[in-house]
Length: 230
Image 1 (cartoon, rainbow, N blue to C red):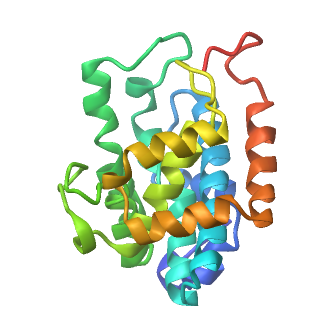
Image 2: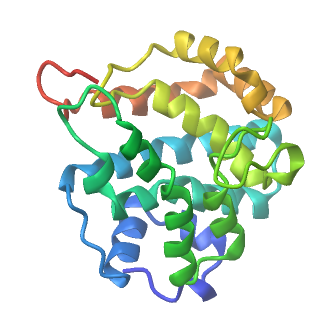
Image 3: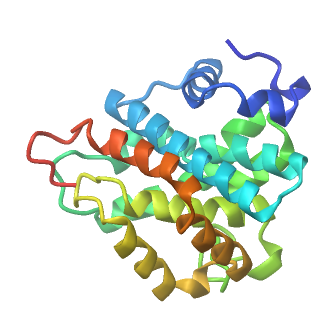
């Protein structure tokens, strides 16, 4: 098990698995996940986002310290959802209700608080807290805009958005990757253009194959039933 997060470097942290990091934080804080399936979904999503961030950092030539920080945060960015999973998840629902959306928007703050309590580096905590900020200032939790948003958060936001679109959800099936890219282009104002352009170049490169393979593996697990409604 991972211990003493405060004395571990970001490199040491990201080299451990998303499963181990999630499990250790939950155990340390004595948090019980109401729906076990949500824990495994968080692992899959965290691993996919982390892989995308790693590939994107290589594409952009990001320095190692920023890369390592972003990779840790990418794997754990949705950990706050596990604290409130019984309020926001449901396998038979067609969409989130207004009250569930309100709970959902708490997850960035909750995740940051959980990681801070466990002694994670402040850069990682900040990246998790701000990963839903939009570049045009329409995101949450603080409505930051432009370069006010931590760079790691901007990296994660692009990769998280793409990963969510190409993944099955309880309320919809995954979009194909070309459609996902088109949808993100339509919402380009939400993203750092420089980072998004790098992501587009990555998407059109041979190196993107590893992410495609992982996405297919995750969606093949049929966790939402044989008829997969999302």
